[in-house]
Amino acid sequence: MEKNDQLFMQLLYMFHTSAMQGLGKMADPTGKVNKNLEYVSQTIDLMEMLKDKTKGNISEDIEKVLEGMLSELRLNYVDEKAKPEEKKVEEKTKDE
Image 1 (tube, rainbow, N blue to C red):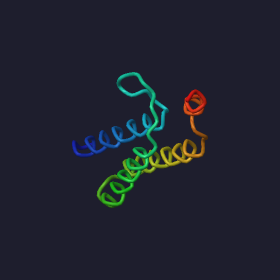
Image 2: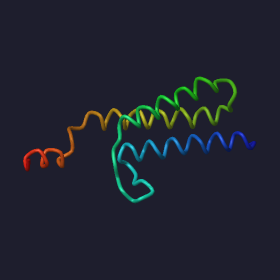
Image 3: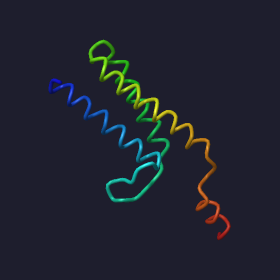
């Protein structure tokens, strides 16, 4: 794998990890688990743009990895979006 392919894969993994953190599936570097679905949506859009802009310029293997990441993120995003608000929000509203 050439250097640019490795760098491109590194970029994809950075986006993927960051989006998984935004989905609340992984802790962030501080050890906290936070959800930010708006951020995840933007990250998915960025990755889709990269897929479109690099079509025909990246190997099939990298294309498959990118598509797999996008599929995983989309499915998790839809799943998280469908969940009701966190109980913490409900409890906070009751206390006020």
